[in-house]
Structure formats: C-alpha cells, structure tokens
Amino acid sequence: MIMLRILPWLLLTAESLLALPILYLCLVAAAAIFSQHMRKLAQTGAEPPASYADFAILIPAHDEEILLGTLLANLSALTYPRERYTVYVVADNCSDATAELARKSEQVHVYERFDQAKHGKGYALQWLMQELEADHRIHDAYVILDADSIVCPTFLLSMNRELLHGAQVMQACYSVLNATASPGSALRWIALTLVNYVRPLGRTALGGSSTLNGNGMCLSRDFLQRYPWQSFSLAEDYHYYLSLVERGERVQYVPDAVVRAQMPTTFARMRTQDIRWESSSGGRSLSVVAFCLLKSGVRHWDFVRIEALAELITPPLSILVAGCLLTFVLSLLIWLWPGLLLSMLLVAGLLAYIGSAFYLMHPPRQVYMALFYAPSFMFWKLWVYFVLSRSKKHTSEWVRTSRALE
Image (cartoon, rainbow, N blue to C red):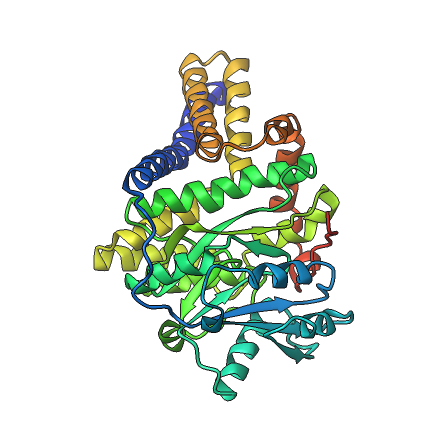
C-alpha cells in the first residue's frame, strides 16, 4: 500500500527530471533553426579574403591504406591557394602500406611513428606537433582530419574567415559520407546531425561553445602554445574541449566548413567507435568536471561554462527516449493521468528535437526509411552505454574501427 501511494510521486518526479534536459534540447533546436534562417538571410556574394592564413593539415593514420588516398586527393583540390596549406600524415604504428601510399601523393609530408607504449590518436597528434616545431615548420593554424574523411572544397576558406574574425579554436560540421549505405549508417547520420550540427549551431547561437569532435578541428598556433595538446584518452577531443571551456575559452562552430567521414555500416563494426565516443575515461571523472564548471561558471558569472555544464549533464538520446517510454508505460499501468499527459509532452519534445535534424538538413529518402530500425539502434546504444563503455576490457585502449570502402 505504501508503494502504491509513493509510486505516483516517484513517477512525476522522474518525469520532471526528464523534462529539464528535453527542454534544453528543444531550446537548442529552436535556436539552431532560427540561426540557420538568419544565416540564409545574411548571405551575400563571396568576397576574396583580406589575407590567407597558412594552414597545416594534420592527418593521424593507423592502418588507413584503404581510405587515406581518397582524402589526399580531396585535399589537393581545395579552393584555397595551394602554397598556403601543407598536408602532414603521421603513420602511427602502421602495419600496412599507409606511409608508402601517402608518399606517392605530391606535396604530402609523411612522418612515421612507432611507440607501442603510447599509441592512439592523442599521442600521435602531440608527437607530430612536436616534430613540426623541431623541424621549424611553422604555420598559422592546424586542421586535424581523420583519414577516412573528405572535406568540402571551401573548407579552408571558411576556417580562414573565422581566423580573420578573431576565432582561435574552431570546429567544423562533422557529418556522414555514406549515409545511404545501410540503415546503420543512416541512423548514424541522424545521430551525428543532432550532435554535430543542430546542437553546436543552436548552442553558439545562444552564446555558448561548440564541442570539439576530433575530426574537423582547427586551432591557431598561438592557441596551441597557450593550451598544448595533452589529451590522450579514448575521447581525447571532448576532454580537451572541457578543459578549454573550464578555463573560460569558447569553441567557435563553423557550419559551412563540412567534413564527412565513412561510417561503419553494421552494429558489429560500430562497437569500437561507439565505445570510444561514450567512454568517459581520461583523468578526472565527468562528475568532477561538472562540479568545476558549475563552480567557475557561478564565480565568474560565465554563461559559456554554465551552458557547457547543461550540455555535459544532458543524458544521451537513447536514455531520454527509454526513460520517457518507461514512465509512459508505468503511468498507463496505474492510470496516472497527469503522468500520462506529461510523458506524452516529453515524447513530443523529443520528436521535435529529432525532427529538427530533418527540417534543417533535408536528408535523402533512405534516412527516413532507416527510422524503422531506430528501436534496435536505441537498444544497442543502451547496451554500449551501460555495459560496454563501463568495461575495462573494452575501454583500456584505443581500437581501430573496422570499415571498408563503400
């Protein structure tokens, strides 16, 4: 009897807690839609920039001979003065022909690194930056790209524009190259569009900071000298972003600088990538980081840090969907009509947030069809989040995501 009396209040409390992150996501989505409309209204004819920054494009590659050639060919055709950017490939602990393939491309500088004790993208990037400084290869800014990607032709022009406007650390729009290859890659397109387009576009429109996604980052040399790359966890880019925001820095989102990457097409191939993205390893726990953001945000009355805290504690979409469905079913079983109403409002909010990706980006028909596979994708993500990403067996070291050229 006591449980029957308490259960309605527990359900309403749970739904109230779910409402906070869902309201935040709806606010961000609305800001993203408004921002995109304003950008379209403000578009004018492209004018030549006042000056061209000198870019170093850094490509950490571990056994990427299958996909690397596509990126190198893509970079040779950018609409940017060829003498103002240099491509560097660091072949990190490779056992294939990655280094040999890169050397066949004109104007590509190849560095080979072998260190079994310190392997992974974070260590490779730090080592390459140190080698460039030692070789007196000085550049105004550094762009970091994954070897399985391609960029839009105007990528460097967009980054150059932001540098001229004073930005020091930037993140490109990171999307999916093979969205129509399978239901898995189509669902990945939806997920990445929400996380890497809708959210950073809305957050920066509100005055917050974008995250860093690893692929498509751009950092000025002056910025890297102040904040050297020292992130080596499975989610090194996200931890580096958190350390920057905690120090009062803001990452500028550049939506018209687009990088698209090949995504695994099956759940089995997605495993290592999902574990890496959901992993919270890397020094301090996220709860400690959240407390530090709250404390420094309140002390400095800094919206960027407070908003970054809101983004940090927002649960993954799969958990929010599962929570809404669970509270709806329980409210139905005990016929708690306020709970039913609130749970339906929460589901409507999530649908509006998810729908913003389709509204803003107009994906191909195959992406819409992939929504039939969304329930299995959600259960997969829950398994990754609660089981695999918590297991030392799966998070103790970086493992290359298995992909094929499709």
